[in-house]
Length: 453
Image (cartoon, rainbow, N blue to C red; front, top):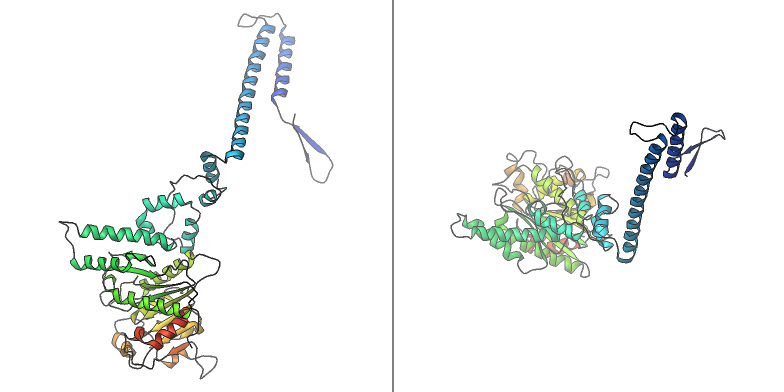
């Protein structure tokens, strides 16, 4: 029998409750049967034509058989559970046991995998449109490898450009999609734009056979010529990560020069920090003018999301040093991303404007990146200094040119400047910065966590 005690208030009064067990229930039924025999008489005939005593005996026998059957089932269930426990201790939990553990939310698929368990690979794609890159990364890392493989097979288009999904996964899916597009457009009888096919083949040539190249983003259907992001080095494992945003007139079909510049930056990072692991990305994830958007909003928010994705998927306990470099109109996009009023703020350790006409703000202190980590590289012979006069009518809100002293002025210390400026000694024009040794040396230092001075 099971007894339980409860103390009410501060008194010492114990209230005992007795739970009905099979034995107690049997005692009560026998007592009730004897009471009916005493009331009606043992020899009194019932409606079934038997005496009261016989009827009660038959009834109690039925109850006894039911209780014995219930006991037998309970004992069998207990024996089965004991056998399962013994088997689990000897051989580990069964697939069904692991599934029940996962369904109950006691362990994730990845935790079960790490413990040597087996998980059901068929999981659903969960991310919603309002999920952050960090939420997506957290979800991805709760999955066992076979579950990740299942999602990659069933939802390749949803995953391949999704910020928060690891770079190696996106690269594999985007390479497969690139091959599909090339094969489709090259098929007999398929009407195609020969320039589009050539562009796709150039992307393939840039990454084919190179294990140190990663196609992180790929959207050939984006307006104004398609979009892509290619990294030299894996940003998920690198200590230093740079992202270059090219100028206007750049799209998926003009990536040869931006890729070459990105590779040169990778070389400079390696020379500046020979023992570190680095990644240099060229990102054309916005519809560049003049055939794309003059408004910076969409490009800025896309760049912010891309940078958040790099943070979310980076491996290791120490965050990478991340730098965003904007060249020409790309500087305007990078500045807008770091403008809380447009992009919402850029998760970057350093921000570099190279030959930029504008940063979307009037003062360096209006950017989300700390002033001491903002760098402006601009030569006196760069025609971009006149860009405000040329494009100010087209671009609403085009602000202060980056050669303006007011942009750098320290409001708390008149005559002092915030941030850093480099005016290369050599004539760089507007596009020669990435061939100028002085500029490249400066960038190599900044991209690996230095000040550039």
